[in-house]
Structure formats: C-alpha cells, structure tokens
Image 1 (cartoon, rainbow, N blue to C red):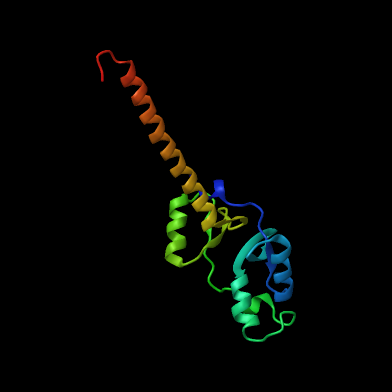
Image 2: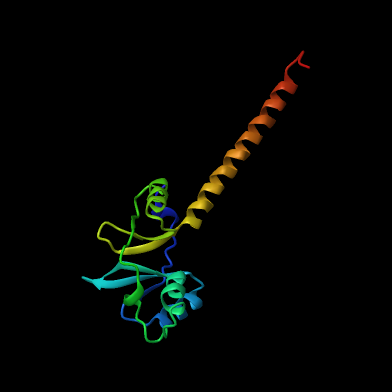
Length: 155
C-alpha cells in the first residue's frame, strides 16, 4: 500500500513570512498540531519546512517572545523529510523512525505538496490489518469446528 493512498489530502499550510501568531491561529482553527511551510515555484505549492505546536512553545513562548513579532521562518525546521506519494507505507514508517519525525508532507514526482502523512495514519492502517488477521483466525477456527462436527465417527 502506498502512502498516497492513506495520507490526508487536507493539508494546512502557511508561508514563511507570516507571523507565529497567525500560524498558531491557523492550527487552532483547523484543529491540527502542525503546518507545512510552503512556497510557490512555477505555479506549484512546494513544501519547504514544517512548524509544530511544540516548536512554538519551545522557541517562542518559553523564550518570552511575542508571537506577533516572530515570523515562521525564524523558527521553522530547516530539515524537511518528505515522502513520495508512491512510496510504500512501511518504507515511509521506516523513514519516519530513522529521522525522528511523526508527520511528513507527501509530494509527487515534481515535489508538489499533495498531502500529509502522520504516524497516527499509519497506526490506523496497521491496526485495521491486525484486526483483519484476528478475524481470519477466528473464522478459520469456526470453519474447522463445523467441518469436524460434520465428519462421521468423530468425537
């Protein structure tokens, strides 16, 4: 299964020259804990960084800075990890674990932003698959009992 099949296509994004205050308002309004920082290149929305609610707390609030005066570009991550929409779900999970990120933008071949994938998205898929395996085991056991009960001379 590819990450493009499960990622959220509703991505909250902001430009790097906006204030932290505006980014925080956007997070609150959209009920998310991160925004993708983007810029337009050749008419395409390209992710360049991420900003999380934790970044805001640690880099702005804990330092006593005024959120309306600090720009997104001042604290956004300079290291961005992305996934191509065609990458395998487990390869993306491996990448997230290796890089220590819980969310990453999903892009196409031209690096255009398509969605966002989170560890929660991946856990949901894995949990669903494990549930299916558990149901399979139960069905197999029931089928075996029915088969044995129909055999003559069986105890």
